[in-house]
Image (cartoon, rainbow over all chains, first blue to last red; front, side, top):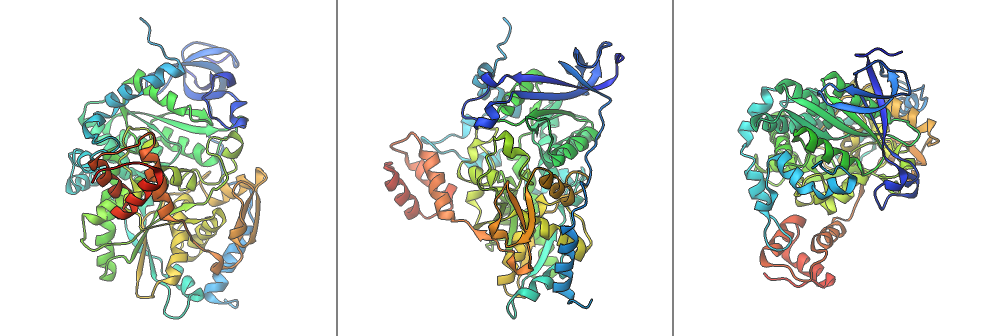
Length: 99
Length: 472
C-alpha cells in the first residue's frame, strides 16, 4: 500500500482516439491523448488504482496511480564512436595529421 | 451552472481566456481588414530597453560574454580560399540563469505577471523556455506550471524534454506532461482558466522585448572586442522571437544595417503532430518544423497577435542538417573547450559555412548558446536516435533524410548552409494574411509591406497574382 502524502506520478487519458482533434496524422489518431503529472497522494492507495493528488502548485488532479517516488533516469546515452571520429577530423584539419 | 470543460467548449472560450491571462486586449491594435499596429503593441509593453536591462540585471539575466572562437575561425580558414574566413564570435547565452537566452523572455513575462498581481504563471513549452520561466518564477515567488509535449504513444519520452522537466521541477514548477498532439492547446487553455494564472507565452510583447537586450549587448560587445559592427549575425530560428527581439535590439542600438541570417535545422518530411515521427527527430526546437510555419504565419501561436515576426527582420534564411549541427557541437567541445547544447548550436553550424565565404577581416556573430547535460547532450541525442532505428554515418550531409538518417560530414568543407528562397516565403505570408479576402484596405497594404520586409511593387505583384484588390 502507498501511504497518503507520498510523492507519486499519475496518468490519465484526456481524449480517447475517437475524441481527438481533426486533421491529425493517421498514427496520432490511433492513440489516445494522455497526461502525466506528479504530486502528493491525498489518501492511501494501491498502484493501478484511481487516485487524487495535490500538485506543488496546490491543484488537485486525478488519474491512475502509476509510479511511487518517481526519479529521473535520463543520461548521456550509450557510447557513440562517431564522436571520436569527429574529434580526429577537426583536430587533423586544424593542426595536421602529425599532431 | 457548471462550466462546460469539453474540448470544443474550452476552445470556443479561447479569446476570452487569452484576454484575461495576458492582460492585453489585442482587439485594440487591429486595423483595416487584416492588419494590426505592431509597433504600438510593442510600445505598450511599457518597458524600454534601459528598464528591461535593469529588470534582467537584478534577476540573473543578460550581460553574457561574447567569446571569440579563435580555433573555430582557424578551422574555417583551413578550408577557405585565401583571405577568406571571418572571425567567429559567440554570445554565450548559456551563462544566463537557467542556461539559455530564454531567460531574457521569461524575466520580462514573470516581471509583468508579478506587476499585474497574478499568483502564478503558465507556459506551454517542451524546451528551454520552461526552465527559464520556472527559474524566474522562483525569483518572483510566483507559482509556475509548465506544460510539455513529452511522450509518444508508447510512453517513450524525448530525453531532452525529460531533462527540461527535471530542471523545471528543480526550480519548483509543476510539470504537466502530455503525449503528442496539438490538443496540448486545450490543456493549456483549461489550466489558464482554472488557475487564473498569467499566460507567460513566448509570443507576447513582453517575451519578445526581453530579447532586445541581447541584440543591444551583442552590438556593444562586438564594437568593444573588434572595433567594428558585426558583418553578420546568425540567429537560430523556430517561433521567431529570438530573431525578432535580437533584430529590434540591434536596430535600437545602431543606425547601420546589420545583416541578420535566420538558421534552422532541416526537418523536411517529418510531421510535427505525428506520434511516430516525434522521437525520430533529434531537435525539439530550432528546426524548420516551427521555423517555416511561424515565418509564413506568425499568428498561429498561442496569442491572437504574435510579437515574434521574423520575416520583418531576416535578410536571409538558411538551413543546416542535423548531422552538421551534431558535428559542430562536438567540434566546439574539442576545439574551444566548451560543452554546449546542440539546439543552440544550429546558428553556429550555419556560421561555419557562412564565415568561409566572408573576408578574414569581417566578423560573424553567433548570438546564442544553451546549456547541455544528461538528455540534452549530443551523445544522448545520437544514442537515442540510433535506438529508434535512425542511421548514423559519415558522408555528405546533403544525403541526410530527417527521421531516417543523420549524416555527419566526413570533411569540414562539407558543412553547407543552404539558402531558402525568402521571396517564396514572403508570397506565402501574404497568401496566409489575405486568406478569405478579395479586397484589403489602404492600411493593410502598408502592413503587408512591413510584414514581408519587401518593396511595394513586390506586394502589388503578389496581390495581383492572388486576385486580391487593394488601396494605396
